Image 1 (cartoon, helix red, strand yellow):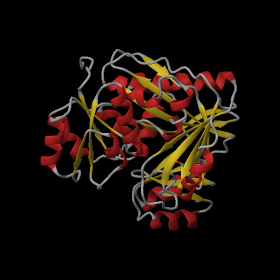
Image 2: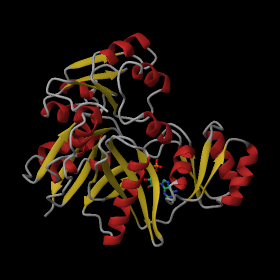
Image 3: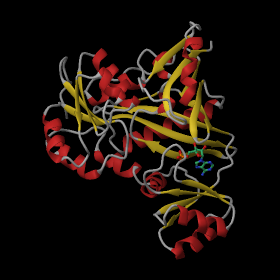
Image 4: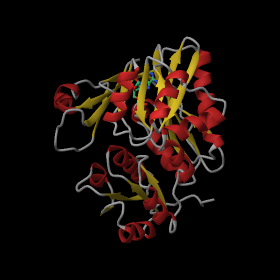
Length: 355
Ligand code: AMP
């Protein structure tokens, strides 16, 4: 058990992207300092943090120095190399704990974990060999979706599959890496729940948001989601079940498919989540403060939503519309301080109050 952190304590964040940046702002509002560890120069989080280490995840000396300089360590993305975590954990607690990262780093482990909790995921099969390809057709069939087990995000490393020749060619495009084949779910909508748990076992979930993707990237999150009250309760309860089963400390995003037969879990992310950005303007305590509260050993906020919200990501050149957007006094603007505007790059987001 960590003692509640006091003003001036230092929170270490592995990863310096926009999520690290917004965690850093929340931590600083609460009187903490932040130390970012990031291999790339000039990361978005460094503009709003106290300390920055620019070093690779295999630089053990830098990792050790970083770990010794902070009171608790958290992370903004799930693909931190295991060895880097081993190194820092020898000197400082890492929250959320390693078990949740291990599960979510591999789609197969994640699906097995969820199935063992009696939660429902799309029918799936593991693919590691040619033989597995044939077997997967029997258990999953077509249409389906082939995904790399590790390092996929925003729809990258995924192919829709309609027949065996597509399956073979797509697997070879994925360099015959370990994959899962899963049934293409005929969902009516996608939703997500952002949940939090602290070390005393308090669990708080924000309202489910309804997500629309464009080119595999989250485009909008709408609150409230247009789902029934029983689906709403289901989504929140299953999130609580996942958090409790992991003895989780921090914020987690749970992505779900809504189907005519009920809810299916797509994936879990053991970190603050893009589909939770609406909380910055829709709640008194947003997902970033909630995460910092949890890992700092503080009580959680109640997560209540005070407004209806439409969150829209600003991708690539959409960020150039900011002048126009800033004239709407019902829009909260959140920019990530990235200089290079690139296609598909998340540059910022806006939260519009739609009451
Ligand atoms: P993921 O990287 O697994 O979050 O997938 C990115 C997006 O692809 C999801 O948000 C869905 O829109 C779509 N997708 C992923 N898996 C499936 C599936 N089994 N069936 C239908 N659509 C899917």
